[in-house]
Image 1 (cartoon, rainbow, N blue to C red):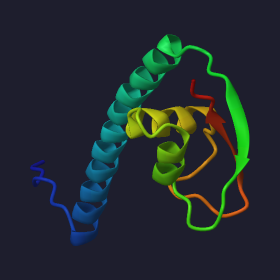
Image 2: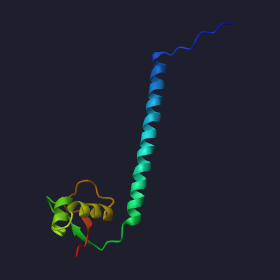
Image 3: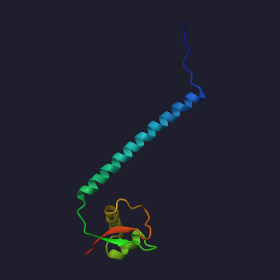
Length: 106
């Protein structure tokens, strides 16, 4: 009894390619989240508690403008990072009327 080699139909090839794509995407996502989680965990360990005040975002304000207003002589990016740490729920842009915490700078 001779058997012929298995052949894939177009549908079989599509299923195989989609399956491989899903595995590759999942692997990438798992690797990315592992690196991202490791960076976040080291940042939270080294971060010291920061005194903060609550402000209401005014129309036209951004993280950059708020950080510059709080401490014009300090690193703006460092202040923006602190604002993000104090407000983990806040998105990339601010909406006027939103209450956020900002670090108190001496």
